[in-house]
Image 1 (cartoon, helix red, strand yellow):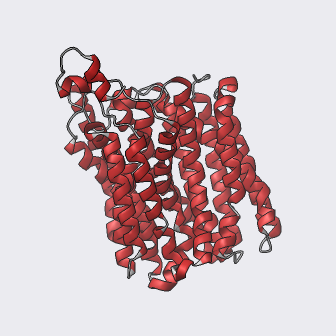
Image 2 (spheres, helix red, strand yellow):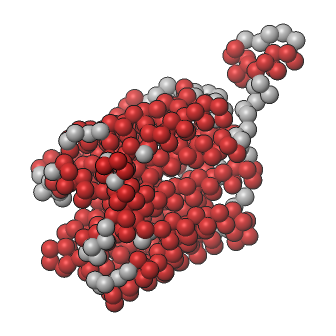
Length: 484
């Protein structure tokens, strides 16, 4: 029902505040859902799209290892640090409004990345791009939660989970394609410039198809909680992602030493705020919801393994197997396709088999990692893209069965009033896990290169991820047996 219709059918003209309280929230149309998913895909793609472009960026801008890592880490740290705040601002100011602002600033910062004349300008633009992504992405889940119900919500959340996984893999495929094609001589710059027309189209669609929603009881931003969460994430993620390339300077160890104290202070401040009746940035009661707790427990190791795998494979294929950017990207195409198809089948499988879908998906992912390790061990250094396809397909099937369902579990019992902050917490967990994966598995791989060689370093990283997957499988038994 539109505002005009409400005015015509109401005897006395209500105040704007009364209209806001009584007007039902419009349902999200299929085109509106497609629009918000398109907006969600942009920041997810951009976390990985630079992986295959890093050698070309290094060649053109003479960046060096430390600055190259900052191109990746600057985006990831800014993104993870501001996600929960972005969700809270959407609850307060309106999710559609923040979605539009996020799209606009993401497009502008992508343009700045694509036009960067030197490495430091690119790093600064990437940090700003990560902050823009943090405004944009939390509004997607919050809008889905607020404008859908029942089976429509379950399908929309599953599509969001599929978008998250497919976009991550598509980022490297698309990056390899754009760098290889060298559109109008743009080279690596095309991986950023391609975002601009997509953001414009998504903005125009969102302005017409995405309904405005906000929390029915908006609260003020939790300043102390925001500052402490940002400090904690920066103190953990920045040294882990940048420390190795910088030679582990004193500041990296100091930041790591700060992390446990800032994290403990954040927890204490949030508990005190909730006990006193204020609204904390991350309500501790939110994390005590069984579905949120069990889902996030699985999200962390999955994201760590996935983020590290995508980074390590991108480097190993180009430096070890001498794939060009296009071949390195195409080698992940079977993973993308299998992930997409598995994620589409997820809602029907969950209705019939419940949490066994997640456990089975994790086991299939483990089988894919084992198949990849055997392929690398037997065929190195003469492995074709086709020889990688079976293991990549198995990985895509397993991950596609797992991630969308875990996303659905986290959101299944979330109150609509906390949709923004809940979505922000989940995406922050996912993004932090991806960054930690690049830092831990990536550091392991790069540290082993000089002594063990590329093949054995890659095997060590893959087998380490296999151990992580086994842990994820065990955590699957803590999930609810059935899902609505």
